[in-house]
Length: 155
Image 1 (cartoon, one colour):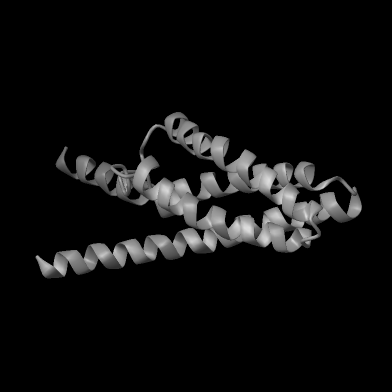
Image 2 (cartoon, rainbow, N blue to C red):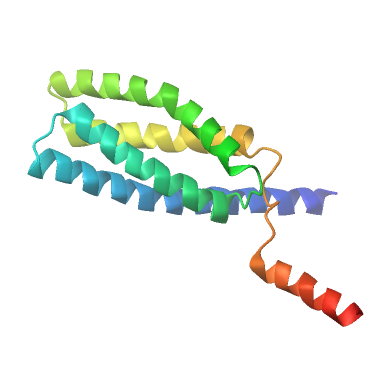
């Protein structure tokens, strides 16, 4: 039983590492698009932040669902649950970010703190609420092909 627990713990660490790597790629998308909106277009903080966050969310959700959580859960339901998270996180982080930036805090420092908060909260919410019972339920194409081969062999 102890070995089984160790395997589960290891699997969860790997899942967290995958989430981190994919979140870093989403963070790069968010930072690059925020910089474009901020530096090139000169948009105010909240407009650039919201658009860059939206790009990051779409990327992060799509890749993590398939690679990190491997969920066969209903995509629409999962996306609605993630949107529920962002329905709370986005206005709060936008409002606090705008307050901080207007108080003289560097907008990139504000963005970094917001992104780290987003990473931690989103992982916990996604793992233990959105995909709590559906992790590793998606059948990979590789496994699907093996099943088809076995069916063919049995004929």
